[in-house]
Amino acid sequence: MRNLKVMTAYRGTEYHGFQRQSNAVTVQEVLERCVSKVLNEPVGITGCSRTDTGVHANQFCFNVKTNSNIRNIGFVRGVNGELPDDISILSCEDVPLDFHARYDCKGKEYIYKMHCNESKDPFSADLMLHYRRKFDIDAARKAAAYFVGTHDFASFCADCTNVSTTVRTIYSFDIENCGDSVIMLVKGNGFLYNMIRIIAGTLIDVSEKRISPDDIPDILAARDRLRAGRTAMAHGLYLNRVFYSEEELFAGSGR
Amino acid sequence: MRNLKVMTAYRGTEYHGFQRQSNAVTVQEVLERCVSKVLNEPVGITGCSRTDTGVHANQFCFNVKTNSNIRNIGFVRGVNGELPDDISILSCEDVPLDFHARYDCKGKEYIYKMHCNESKDPFSADLMLHYRRKFDIDAARKAAAYFVGTHDFASFCADCTNVSTTVRTIYSFDIENCGDSVIMLVKGNGFLYNMIRIIAGTLIDVSEKRISPDDIPDILAARDRLRAGRTAMAHGLYLNRVFYSEEELFAGSGR
Image (cartoon, rainbow over all chains, first blue to last red; front, side, top):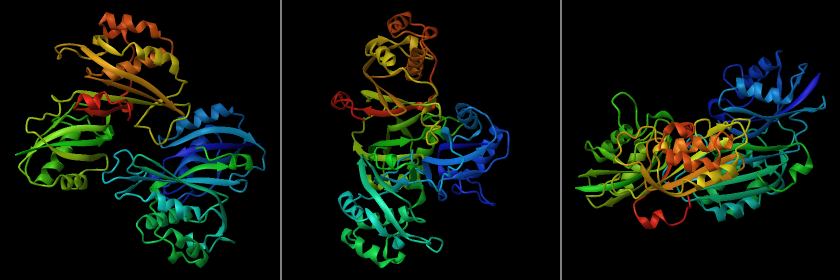
């Protein structure tokens, strides 16, 4: 028996998120079908995370146990040959049998992409949030700084009933601006349901002066979803990187 | 009567090029329908260029004559409100009645985008050429330099029967490399049918050592399409900028 650690990337537009569902097409279902075909045995895969409908991944890890003796490069080429255009296998390596893509994950980086211009970008209708106004990047950066550190993020969680704690640690929160693009990069040890989308939406409310940057500590302290801002749309969100060692996690913010 | 100079951008994937055809959906047809609706009169538009099926535009200029007294920002917002997600109006300004988007164009810049990696990019299936091998950027740059200047490009033209001369001037030819992306930027006073795609394909043949960089002068001199390389696929090609003054045209290579 082998355990393969596989990195993949996908465009989430056509999928109801990663996790298998009985009544909708998901990334997991398509991957399991293609991986099973190439391994020549029915397999289940274990993903590092769930993602919402329409959310993308530049890097998403899953592991799969198999009896196949396929070479790793053969796995990459074979599965890519079966997959549709919007899912790609990036790499495959053998790992110890007890490796678990979700439980062993040390941290994740998400990015949220916005196209800020009166005119839409015809290439990114489903890949960036189209924001028609000017985005106040200075105010957003000031607000973003308050999220860094260990906090109770209950105000930034859509449904916290299934988690034992709403305390999470954000290691870095950068906002980059290039031309009409604004990209938020958030790295942390874990994220609650809709947490990044609510944080991104709150920064949009900060840009529009509905929330002041200096309100963020009070909003965090309130532990009340109603105090935070809107939930930003799913199609601007990308799982950007997943980390399985602290060296990787703290090795600078390069993308 | 007014004459409006309009900048637009479009994702070419779903269109049979720019120019109106009787039997296929084109960008011109969609633009004319939406512009006529907003101007409240039937209009024809004059484009700066034809583009092939699947070719994209980051900047494409058309002009349209109208009796409407709509404000320019109202035109931009109104037409964008009518257009599908893959065509965008970027700007609109009044110009003299004799301005002609094609005849007055002083030069154009095209880019050709490649994703060079064994694994496909799930976000760019129809936006970049997927090239599975390593691209020899040094050899391609060496070959590219031979194209700069005024040459007879008959070897790099798919069908030259309709043009009075096959002599064109290329002002600059840069090849940029960022991560897995290779981007060729070519600026010139005009281009023959399929010229950039044949040049890009020839550079791929250079990368694969089927053609030597130093063969380019002989291939140009031969004036024979069969001496040049393959025609690179349309979906990597973008009309990137169009220039209506020599100041713009020679003001550095910024994109």
